[in-house]
Length: 122
Image (tube, rainbow, N blue to C red):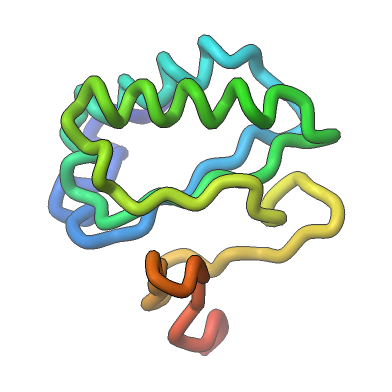
């Protein structure tokens, strides 16, 4: 709800980042994912990031539909070459792991891996 307000991070914060999304146990319908991603595109965020990781939906509901919407928006925005990993177990999934904010990470498209390269705690 804070997107576009003075509370929202400046656009430069998103430069060269890996954006991660998860849908929680709310399991929104696929069209909400499309609107959600278009909102990030309109704000200029999607064109700044270096990749996206998308958490596996709770109970695997809408897994393929979310992927279709994600790829559709990236294609519409001319970002079809952006590295994307879907069906990751973080956030509100089981099993789960926690992703640390602001840590150096890497999507390796050749090996098809995602790595956190820095410690998640100081």
